[in-house]
Image 1 (tube, rainbow, N blue to C red):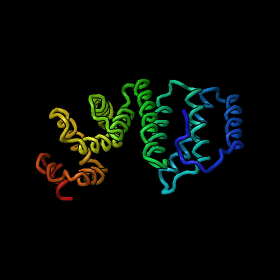
Image 2: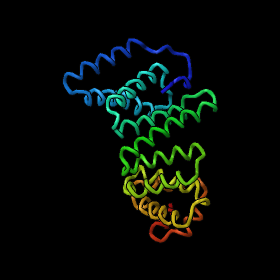
Image 3: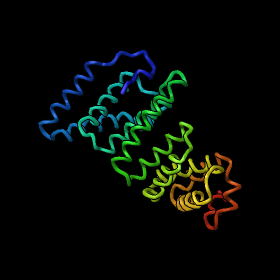
Image 4: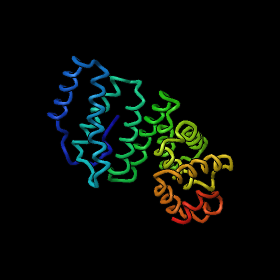
Length: 231
């Protein structure tokens, strides 16, 4: 995968890459190929999670090192759905936070989408990966049958997962007028569960953000209606 879309300005740290490869080669003597892949994945996710918590974008040299580590992890363990899902997240982050021109966003989102497709192909019952796929399709302006099928699969396999509930709620509220009545009923059940959860505030924020609170205050039954409308 090319990484030429991100901001220029830093030379790739060859010594850092060499050190990482050396570490992975050393690890093979102790944990085998899968162990090396795990090391690379852990290295990337350590960086990635720190980026998500920071208001600053990473330096390009750090991005390249983290990307290379995860790329090798996928190469060493090609059927690992977690690695492909996380590479999808990696490219999604890059498209949102590390581009100079809007024209660079779509190619990166397309790469992200391909990795989420791989993740659900490898693990068809993984609700979170389906939710991530639906989210990317939404970002790309894709609201066709594929988008709604991704949402349905996310609900089917991940309705009890908070991250899936929140993603599906936001996607549904943003596209409520285009959704079919059966789809709305499925999402209403997700929202009702969410409003009874410890993450109730996050669901309320999503509904209010899209200006849909008056509507849901009419259609939701009690006590979920009270939890939303009296917040």
